[in-house]
Length: 313
Image 1 (cartoon, rainbow, N blue to C red):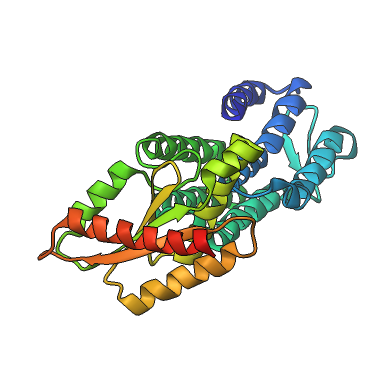
Image 2 (cartoon, rainbow, N blue to C red):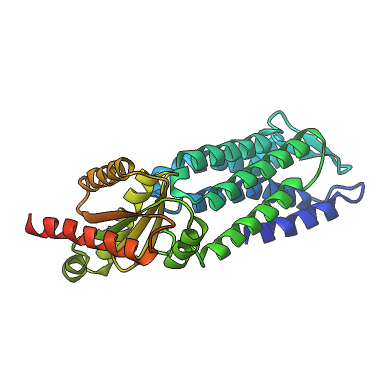
């Protein structure tokens, strides 16, 4: 919606550029365009941080945009950022590069946060975010120093289309609640790595039925998201997380040995100890000489042994 508004504003701004007499509506179109371009990057940042508690980010992220809005809106009177002469000529004020600087700040922030939280993204989303940032950087530089017009709008349009395509494809690969990969993706991945040694770790959230019955399904959903978050945080880029359905997850690790797997499980359990929830784990190893269904069965049996230990403790 913001992009549609920016496109309309840019068309109007191009129209108001024509002629030797200033149309005061040009202030409105230019101001709106200056404000909405960084605002779109802010929206992309919040989409990227959709799994985080955004209250801890909201002021840090929005304060530069609020400052820009105040300066842009007052520019027709103060001429601090931009102004137009009576013959419709554009003048850059002493803070004329501020909108570009703030857009650049948000692009850098987008990149930094994408690296900080990269362990929560799959590679496709991380690559998409990096491309968005690259397009925005190039467009901002060309607009700032080479007098190209509307490039940032065009790059943001392309970026949002890329992000939309990513989310569209993601629906067929990602579990909507937990952000883990789904069962179909697991089958595809296992076929892809069929000639490798793969650690298959079965994970089951303990007591989900009791949580749902006692506290409600919303609490049960939160418990599943907490487990998925702990798995992703400890997996980083070494393991892939899949949700099989209900309270069951599968973790795969290509070319991982027993020491690696036990370290991973220990780290996840240690993180879960800081929450109200716990999970049971079991694992086995698949290779090309072994039946895959037998591997899953072994992992499942080992997980239920761990669950019995949890129940009797």
